[in-house]
Every structure is written in C-alpha cells, then in structure tokens.
Image (tube, rainbow, N blue to C red; front, side, top):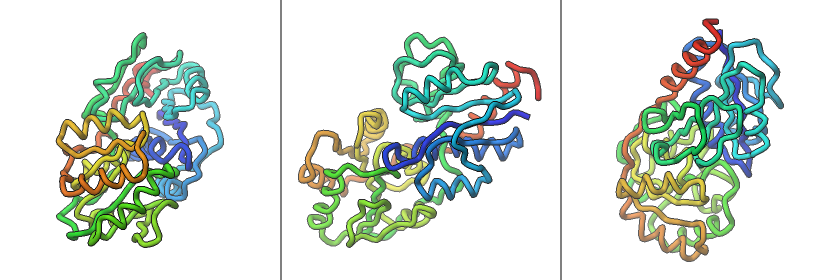
Length: 303
C-alpha cells in the first residue's frame, strides 16, 4: 500500500482551489485502492469540508509520520509550508503543486503544474520531473454537461475565497447596467438581488445559465470540462497564465487587477455577448495518481 498525504488550505484568504484540485487527485487515489489519503491544512470553507467528508477523509491539523512508501503533495503559496514539505520525512516522494514557476525549494522530486498552460512556466534549476500540460489537469469528477441553459441567466464564480471589494462593487454595478439578465453566484459578496447558488451543488445549478463569468482559477478548468460559454476575469497575478490560455482560445478576458469597479463592470457588460466555450478538458487526475504511485513504488519497492 502507498498512502497519499496532502498539505493544502481552503480559507477566505487562500481560496478553495488548492484543496479542490488536490481532492480530485485524492478521489482518483482512493478509487485505485492504492492506499489511505490524509489531508492537513486550514480547511475553513464549509463546501470544501463537505467534499472532504464525502470522500471519507478526516482533515488533520498536521500530517503524522507514515511508514513508507508514501507520496506527499504540497499545494500552497505559503513559502514556509513549501519548505517544510521539501524537508518532510526522508524517503517520501515529495510533490510540489505549483502554477507560478520560479525556484523550487530543496527536497522535492516532482513539480506538478495542474493547468493546461503549464508547459509555458519554467522551473530553472529544478532537476526533478515536471508534470505539466493538458494531459495532467485534474478536474472534479462527475460534473454535468452544459446543454444551452436558460436565455438571460448568467452565473458568476469568483473563487471560494473573499472577493476583492472593487470586484464585488463591480458586480453590483453590473446588476444595474445589464438590464434583463438574471445573475447568480456563490459567496458572501453576492448582491442581495442575485440568486445564491449552493456551493455543495454548484455546477448542477450553474449549468442552468446561458453564460458564466469566472475567475481564472480552478473554476476555469471546471468550466472547460462542463462546456459553458464563459467570460474570464483575471483577479490576481497567479491567474495570468489561465487568462492567457483563455484569450488564445478567443474567450473574452477582463483584467480586474488594476481596474476600478466602474471599469470592471463596463468591461464585463461589453464582454458578455461575446462569451464562448473554452477548449474542452477532461479529468486527468487518475493519470496523475497512476504516475505518482508508480514513481513511489519504483523508488521504494512495491508495497
């Protein structure tokens, strides 16, 4: 047996993406019967807690040392967590999930870039294996397919974390400017006049829309799997690669990083009639699970 150990957070500041993409891997790992799955980190978002519980994983404050073989997957932008993972339990296959590029802390054997644009991002000086590109993208399993939705209905997904105040204000403005559109969204920022989506069944409700406004994070990859036409909002620097990928596919992209609420709302109103579907993506988490399991067993011998 080979255990999968995950270090990831899900909070208002960190968002849900780190946990959700590693949980796609966890689901594939459990389905393969390879071994146990543990997840440690600050898991504060209720819908992520429910996803963890549904997978039968007990969230931990910290990972305990394990008998080998084991695979440790660290998905965090926190440098202390990254360094700690690289130094964790000798003999473990250590995997850093990264979509930023640049230096990799000592101790990691594998870098896994989970975006379809990952091949563009360099890791100078890293001598291990880099898993990147469309064949290594994890997507939550069982997502529904979009079949046209309802005319005049637009869903908005800005990540599981706290929305930037200017972006939240922009959505209020958009409500007033885009008359005749029924908006829906998830999160504390959602305007009172909008339909509030249930985060536990997010895509079941979101596919009722005829278009989607989405941040360029994990929901972008899920939208590509679902097939719904999208407008992409780049809300942070780490979302730039995803925004470029969408733009190359002729999907409209609004850069909200340096814009005020009025500018964002106006840009979104112009972009909505141009929404189009992203290049289709399929869940490659089972392929990632197989590769990591084989690498761990080749390193330490069969369990």
